[in-house]
Amino acid sequence: MKRFSVLVTFLVVAAAYAQTPPIQPNTPDVKIPGQLNFPAPSDLAIGKQPLTADEAVAIALKRQPAIGIAQGNLLSAQGRTEQAASDLLPSVTAAGSYSRSTIFKGSSSGSLQSGGSFTSSVTADQLLFDFGRTRDLVRQAQTSESAFNQTLSRTQQTVALAVRQAFYNYRQAIADEANTVANVANRQRQLNEAQARLNSGLGEPGDLVSAKASLASASVSLLTARDSTITSRILLAQLIGVDPRTPITPASSSEAKLSEESDLQQLVIEALNSRPDIKAAKADVASAKYGVSYAQKGNLPRFSLSAGAGARGTNDPLQTEDGVLSLNVSWDFMDSGFTAGQVKAARGSEVVAEQTLIQVSQQAVADVGQAYLDVQSAVQRVDLANVEVANALEYVRIAEGRYTGGIGLFSDVTTAQTSLVSAQHDQTQAVADVERARARLRTAIGRL
Image 1 (tube, rainbow, N blue to C red):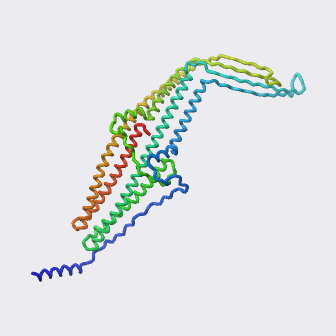
Image 2 (image 1 turned 90 degrees about the horizontal axis):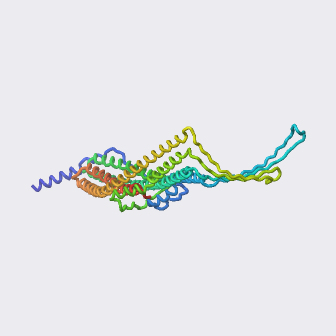
């Protein structure tokens, strides 16, 4: 019996040394892609220090063209208010002239005659009473100016939100890229394990081919992730208002949790009272009402006072002096329906303004409600994603251990690694969603 055991052992060892070398699959090696080259501008102004979300917003509020456009519109509205108000104040006009005439030929005399004359005048006009029509026009311009002021505030909030969203998108892209780099490293390690097992005669050629295919797929994902990171950076720089080529490193920052974050009713109340677009819509309604009042007074008389002084003379400009004081009345009591049409148009604008206010208010409530739900959902998903990543990491560890020990399939390893990549993406997505949702909630209630 002992001799038989020795003989069997000898035959097994001999067979091991005499076995056919493992068949290497005829597949190309995978080349890991390098970093994408995107040169920075030579006159780099910012980008040397990491930026927080608040710092990025501060830069955007100074540089973003959309805010400049809103400021220009506000400036124009202020000018229109000043123009309207000028009709309530005296207007003074001064005029002067010197004329010289020459008679070359006339019926009474054949001699050359010539002479010069001076004229000058100063006239002042002051509106006395027009039944408040001009004041309605001034108030209409003032409320319109207020609406443009609120529009500027809303534009600032919109730009700030866009910058914050882009900031957290960029930071998520960086995190996804880091996870993709780790995935490539894991796929390379799994490929090395499959190659080692094949070389030892314990592995299958198909495992090596599968490992190479997984590494190639991970490399493609890495290239895509790097491209996405640069694209996100370009968009952030553009929203900030700097050269899109500027390198930006996002610093660690997060959106502060609102004290009213869990009180939807309080959030809605604050939004209806604080949002600039609602204030602008209310100002537009008031402006439209003043427009109706102005149009209704189109057929009423207008009383004004004029005073003037003048002088004229042939050689002496003050040879003859005179003055005039007059009370003027103008009354377009019949305009063939012009005023009626103007009133109808003004009432139409009033209806539009009122309905716009309702629409904007409803949108504000919807924005608050959606952001409120998004915050709650994202916060819960962060906890779930953390559990998902922990389980995926353990799944990879177990699958790799089973494969290394010869009791598991390589397909289990690739499946576990794919699950890990998906879980890590869910985690970075959830973390970024919390920041983005809180930024939207702050904007939805009207806070900058």
